[in-house]
Image (cartoon, rainbow, N blue to C red; front, top):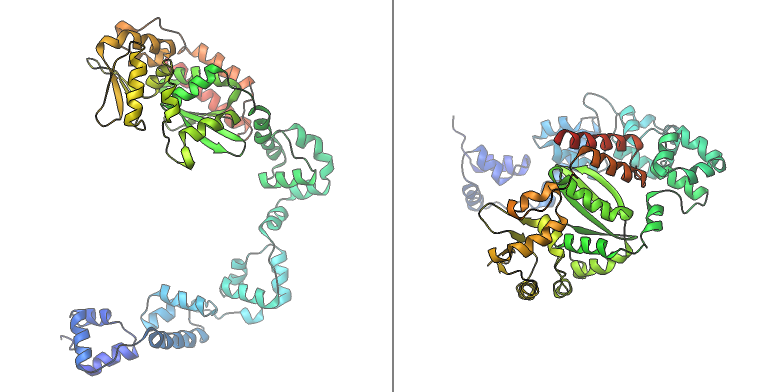
Length: 452
């Protein structure tokens, strides 16, 4: 039988049961506009939010006092359980468990303090007394009880740190001698606890990553190192601003490992880590003070996207083409080599074109300013520069007739020797355990060995 919406039925659902106009419209298979027009025709007034809420609040309080759970109240009132739950929390009502009576009346300040001293959480105490953690929190405020801080809870849960902190002077030499990671692994304590121990001993400079950075970040870059960084910033390189200086970072795929190795060899005194990431390896240097000037050029006024500065283009070194092309350039059989860069502006291309032409390299700038190609007549001088920097795994970017002598940097013996040199220059790095570095080291050698 079809339901008919008359005045009495509407008043029952809208005023008594608290249904909305939309819910009534769905219930009687009519539109919300129809319901609103009929209400106006009957001369009935719409309820305010406070009128609606006052009825719901009184009903929620009533059923909660009888020990009904949120689910049971939602079922009785035919409302969403999330709505009931939010009102119960706003009203600071106890959370009743379904079919169970709350035992919170049995809780005393002494019992609550004792449970908190035993590192029980507010949630676990609430479950014991069949109530909510909000109720327990309210009792704690009322009784002036403070829970243990996260630091106190952490320390009490770690007997190793408690033992060390009681006799912390005995561990002074080890804190100074060992890296942070090795000390934490040896005594099974957290890094934050290690920092607390360092503060107890009043040690501000130990063999952690930052203290090693402080010892190296003031060194001067050689011209070769600076040229590599500037040229690579035109290609795949990037900067990251840190507290102690500017970190240089760069990613290369497994197929370009010899090329990455070449850069690692040049930047070796400044290398912080070379780690597997995705389908390749990520190189990071320690923070370098000298790079702050370049950082301000490439990232002006705190820009997050790299920009090519006028100063770099105006003083362009022709040899920068080497790393730039090998990083971001491409060559396809039958086509001209393309050097890509999405950040160079139109007026910068005008300057760059003049400088390259003075070195017998003629270029064609793409209309969308995303790069430039080399004219065929300029292939020889262009590839003479590229060959100076190309390793064997980058020769695919050079036409065969322009390739110079191939090197043997892809051989597994060469790589093994080079990475062992790196290993002896400070690896494993401070924040990575020795076991993890061993896995990475073997993975690298095995990978290269299987490719040769």
